[in-house]
Every structure is written in structure tokens, then in C-alpha cells.
Image 1 (cartoon, rainbow, N blue to C red):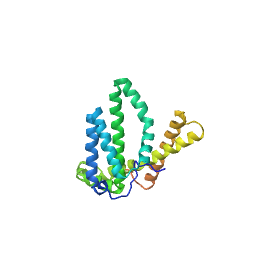
Image 2: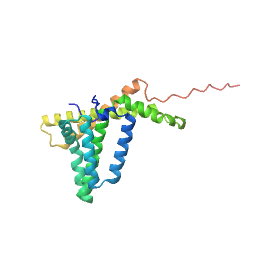
Image 3: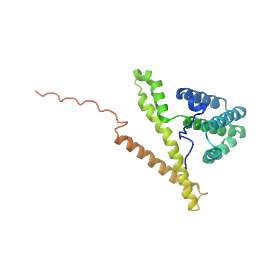
Image 4: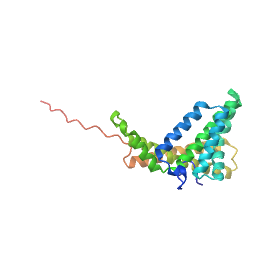
Length: 214
């Protein structure tokens, strides 16, 4: 199963032709506005825009359904809690905004190669080197997050299928516990692979020569 979130889909759409920096800025502005407003009308507008962006990026209805089914595990309890605390309008705004952000991020990752994203981040953060920032490390962290998203969603799908095969699809424990364990194992394997390549290791300070004793 291939998840649309985090997967680059080659194409020649308008979103594909936009510069990665422009898309990053647009995604930031969209997320900021959606979170700041977070009312029923603004949430509906954000969802319409996000669906249009995802469709333009090449996501098919089947992939929309796949994202919605995976999101339902979080959306249902989150909506219930928010509705109980502050009313259904608040629940709809919170859940709808989160779904809109996921779809907008899907459109971004589907139309932007990871290498282009990391190059853009490295270029944008280059002036901060004088203040001690490490643009290469920030870009690497961002690319790892982008690549981890489809991996984690794939693990979730495999775990759900395994629970269903054992007749335990309605048991949250049969799904959540293996999912957490497998996700942690995946993160540890990624860290070990990076360490084996010498990535992320701090440079050891130069050894001081022993003082001569007289």
C-alpha cells in the first residue's frame, strides 16, 4: 500500500511547477490562517482549499479515502472530547482544521521532491550560520520527517491488517501496542543507520596535551 502523505508523485501540474520555497511559504501561510481563525466557516473554506490542492496534486479519490480512514482513529475521539468540552462547533473546527492541514501537507509532499525541499531549507537558513545554526542538519531532520510519514502509515496499515486477521480489529490494544513498538523500532533502526554513516555525531574536542611535570 502506498500512502499519498509523504510520497512524491511525479507530474506536470501547476503545483509541480511552483518553486519549493514558494510552496513552503504558502503552506506556512495556509496553516497559520487556518489555526488562527478556526471557526466553522473558516474551517469549511480551509477544507475546500485543501481538497482542491490535493486533487490538483494528483491524489485520487481512493487515496482521499485512505487518508480519511487513517485520520478517523484520531478524529473521532478528538471530536468527541472537544464537543463535550466546548460544543460541536469547536470539535468540528479542531478536527476539520487538522484534516485540512494533513491534506495541504499531502499536496506539498506529492508535488515536491525531498531533495528540492532540503536544498531550499539549506539555502534559506544559510544566513543563520553566523549565529551557530546548522542548515544542513535542519534540512536533514526535515527530510527524515517527510520520509518517516509514509513509513509510519505503512506500519499502521500492516498492524491493522494483522489485528484484523486475528479477529481483533475492534480491540484498541491489539492495534495501538504493536503500532507503538514497531514505530519505535523503526526510529531506532533509522538512528542506527545514520550513526553508522557518521551523521549526527558531534565532533570531539581536541585532546589537550598533558602538562610537563618538573
